Length: 374
Image (cartoon, rainbow, N blue to C red; front, side, top):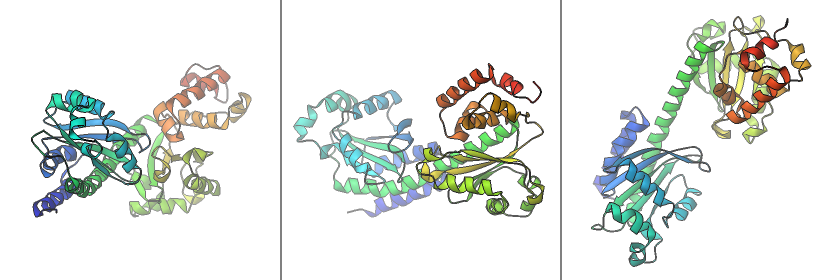
């Protein structure tokens, strides 16, 4: 039976995400209420980065636990008899909850296990309850609620209480993580505009909603004046040339992401349609269902001229030409790799081949070699 005070605790968690401005603030604010809510003596939370299949433990937050002790505790989780059960549950649910006593044959066996003797006992702990929260594609993080030996094991009611709270926690974490991604990506793009040959940018999600945009886009797209930012993409899209429309259509429907044959296309300035010179890229770094389009307005006055006949002469492949295009636009290696959906290591391999073909030793000499009159 869930008590009224527990229902009130869940409501308080629901309000935390609206009051907090960051994941860090939200997690730290939730630790003590969650510890009390589940009758624990201490609690820890570890954020997770990556997908369910490729999750990496990241930031650590604890109550009355040093980071050293918490990392030690996490190390022993690998031999926790509950780990296989939690992994199995996460395959069939957006959250998962479990306690160690579910999978031990007897308290005597548990007390004599390496897991208890080497990990919990030195820290004065006994019972553990784990709660993993996330959405259909990602695990946001893992809670561990720990009790000392003076308290009972966690029971099915505790599991129910934890899972009821997990919905509110996952919702709050999801909103704040998305907000932080957008803020960091916006700052990155603004910084990139200052260093690269860009005049503006616009990013679109797989549902064709505007995610981010630079200020002053109406200066480059006259038809956007006095229009709502939410309508920017639809107004731009209806003026795109056929090759760009096909690129976008193919990019959004390709599955999985690595089947995309071309990760960007360029559009030359078109006076008739009021379109500036721009580059459109498909961003697959967050997976198939979270693809995004990135539209960059290029500053052609600052871009080096590359002789096409030299690209042919040096037998530069289509993928290598795309890399050279980004180099000419002033993008750093990390931004080139991100725009093309490849790893830094793969990008460096392409550069090695390009430098070998053109007898160049860096980006500056590469662009100089590809100038029309050299």
